[in-house]
Length: 161
Image (cartoon, rainbow, N blue to C red; front, side):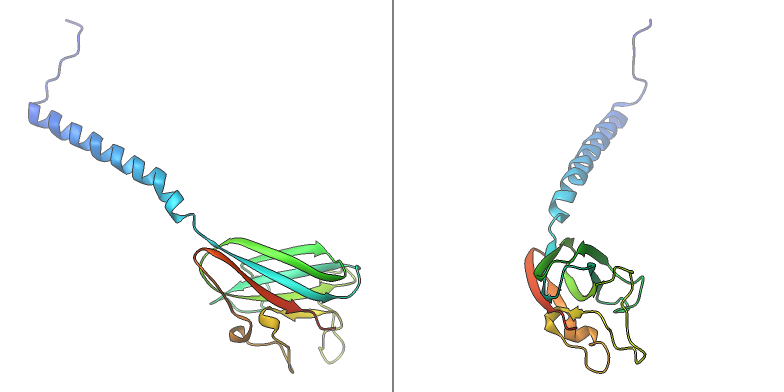
């Protein structure tokens, strides 16, 4: 009298079993999907010609389609205490695409790129692909580095003071 009995017709029970099988397949797919999507590229930047150990190096990464060099448009950024010579910065787990890198040596650690009355930087600046600033910053296409779906790409960014 207290046992469980089904009042559903046998065709409904089969449909319920089919639904359970579909739900199990969906769960397996959802669990394996992140592993399949985990492939990402890495961008390494060799910042060269660092003069002195005062202040910080500030490296900003801009994805294609963002406003290059505009504050708040960075895809990622890294800040480290400066060391003379060359320092390497890595940005792992990037989606495949084109990225531009801008670097400045914030020697006085005020968080700003200082410039003279003409707007010319008085602190070291650099861009990916060793692109140079000529009467203004380089264009995105000059600094663009293509990050692959998998693997690592390295670019040079020699500072000029």
